[in-house]
Image 1 (tube, rainbow, N blue to C red):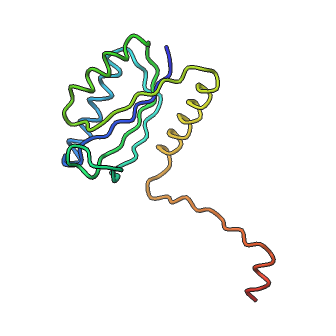
Image 2 (cartoon, one colour):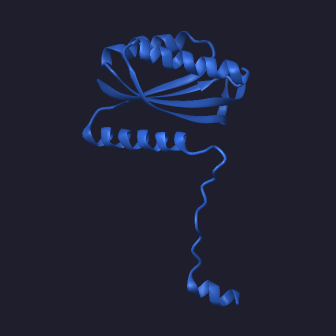
Image 3 (cartoon, rainbow, N blue to C red):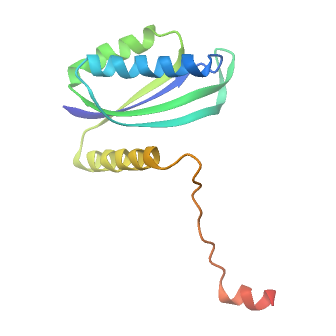
Length: 136
C-alpha cells in the first residue's frame, strides 16, 4: 500500500448538504477500492485562480489515504465521471522523504480536525527592545 493525497474541488453552486454528500461519495470511492483514509482536511470555499466551467469559486477538500497502486486508475476514473467535481489532483508519496512529509501532513490535518472550530490560533508578537524604547 502506498500513500496518496487527493485534492478535489467541488462545484460551489451545490448546497452544503449536496457538497457533503459528494465528499462522502468521493471517500466511499476510495474505501470501496481498498483504501484506508488517514485524514481529511476541509479547506472550504475559496476563490479560484481562473474560472473553471464558468465558476469563480470552488469547495476545496483534501484526503490523505493509503491504497494499492493498482486502484488509483479506478479511483481517478470515478472522479472523472463525477460531474460535480471541477478538478482533482492525485499526489503519490513514494520515497522515504516524501512519506515522512505525508505523515506530517496527516498529523497536521488530524490536529486541525480535533481543534474546536471557534478556537482561533493566537500568535504572540515579539517587539524588539529598541522599538519598545522608541514607543515610550
